[in-house]
Amino acid sequence: MADLICRGMVIRTVDYRDNDRILTLFTAESGRVDAKARNCRKATSPLLGCTQPFTYGEYQLFYHKNKYIIDQGEVLESFYPLREDVEKYAAASLCASLCLEGIQAEERNEDIFSLLYHTLSFLTYGDSDPGDLTAAFLIRFLALSGFRPAITQCAACGRDLREDPVIRFLPDKGGAVCAACSPVGRKIGRTALEAMRRMLLLSDDQLFRVKLKEPLRAELLSHLVPYAKLYLPGIEKAAALFTSLHMPPGSAEQE
Ligand SMILES: [Zn+2]
Image (cartoon, rainbow, N blue to C red; front, top):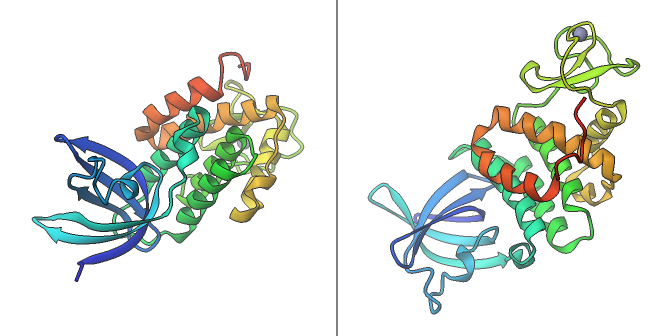
């Protein structure tokens, strides 16, 4: 009998020795689970498939010397195309690294699991722009993990911002801020704030409906990625890869 049987997604892999790998699984029921997979990188290993990045699988784990060891695994969904397309890979990596940073061990989190599962599904098999899906993932992840930015009300004074001609988006203040509370800082358009608000209202299976025009997509990402990095600094590396591919310099002019 295994000590733990769980379904989860591989959100991090760390290789060690010649053929071994440590996986971090994100499970809906038990949050983060770290587990060793021995010899899984050998071409003949039965664990080869289920230990690949982004794979969703069912795993049988043994507890040995304070660590979980993967005994058996079955691939339920490989999300294989994510590993063949660098733009999709960068988007998936940013989503996975947010989960890695924001999810605790032994903490049930069905909402964020569902968000990640649907986002990777649309990224893999849909025709959505990876930047659109990432923008939607970011705002929804931030809201679900307790870092929701202020969108319709000033983060400093609480006033309704929706008719204001000048609004700024300041990560260290907690999001949108009125001109009276902050006379300096990067501005954000009302359309971008409205897009954030609407993306929070969708259900996960409707994420494919997010279709942004290029300047708006760039504006949203240029606010949300730095915001997420401030509160979850561990995403830095994945954010840098994503930024280099999806946010070319000048794509969202600073004011
Ligand atoms: Zn204010």
